Length: 559
Image 1 (spheres, rainbow, N blue to C red):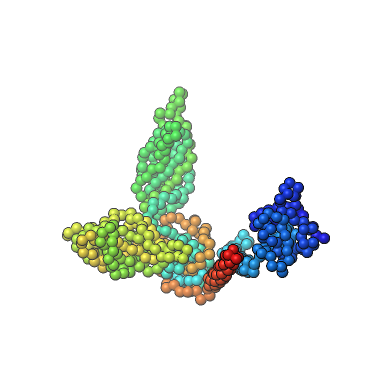
Image 2 (image 1 turned 90 degrees about the vertical axis):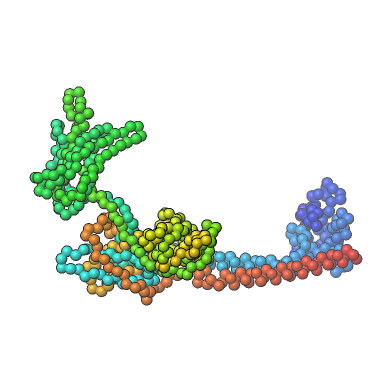
């Protein structure tokens, strides 16, 4: 016979076990002997008298068929007596488990699909260390690139082009997915240059000879530039020592015999504690002499006790070219939408939307052609960006780097009014003009501009057919060609300019595999809808059962 002694029992918050019998005579007792003479077996349902429990007596196991008042259904298990679960409770547990399994399966499938998509190697790389040829089928758009014909004389060996709206509309914002192929399908290395104004300072190749460092007199070195068609205007001379002031003379010559003075000054270096002053570069007028001679005299203040002059040596002598590159700007016509009334800076004003004609168009300046003869209006600008998980388009303020005031005094010529700001990449701008009590401005047209994006590449060996520029691959890696890293800042002679033809969709384009949630975007809504319906049904069912139990308990209490 199965013994159920020393097992904890719970009867509506009252706990006991057989071990309590020795210390409390009034404790509830339960053993196999009192369990209706062995009729209590595991996993079988019995009833205990609620009246006996309320009176503090030992639980009385009764026959479930006998009409005992307040009989409480219990289930006998190896752990004691527990109330059996109702069918509604069991249904709720099963439905909850089913919903949990469905949601976990959907989440696992989504994560696995996303991991497979992210882990798939890009076309430009494989698991091996060597890069494999890139497939043109991974690029969605392309534009033909005509190559200018080469002349019999010394034609430029470089070709360049400026990117336009078609490229910005479909390429990545950073333009790292550009790929250039010749007519045979071979990749052409290129350099992408941001043509903003900048100062260029670069070394001019030269060969050193006739270095002389005597014990008395000036030290001297001569440089041969090997050609006389290179312009330069600066020389940098590094010498040994500290805290000195040495006279320097720089001369130029076409044949190495007749010399003309280019500049005479001083090399200065002083250091005090953490402060250092070092003047080792000298500038002069643009020159094209093939030979350059540098003479440096010892510092007269550094004379030893034996009347010996200062000893020093040349470390580096470099001929340099320093120039201001004005850069190149790309100016395009914007589409000005009709004026709308609005408020600007808390006052009545006008609002115009400026369509730039393509997504991700770079812009750092607008020029407005205004017909009015006299005005002074405050302005502000906003750029359109996508935000939020759904990619909603919103306008955000952009800071002006020019004065936020458009003014034209009486008698002034009707030149375009300009607004400058930090460069943005967007499709639309919103212009606010504060009118106050003045009539709105009459804006006839508007232009926008930004530093040009220039693509420079070597002229293809085979000029048969057209080359092609591919773009529109968000997963492509930046190529980082050696050609781009070795290309000098200043190109002489200037590359031969060509223009992109109209962009077209790549007929052989193969889209990359999409994540599970993008392939079946409706599935998540179906699952969520189904779960909502099931939960609503469970809530209704449980509510009805609770109402029925409440009504039955009230009826029993009244009886």
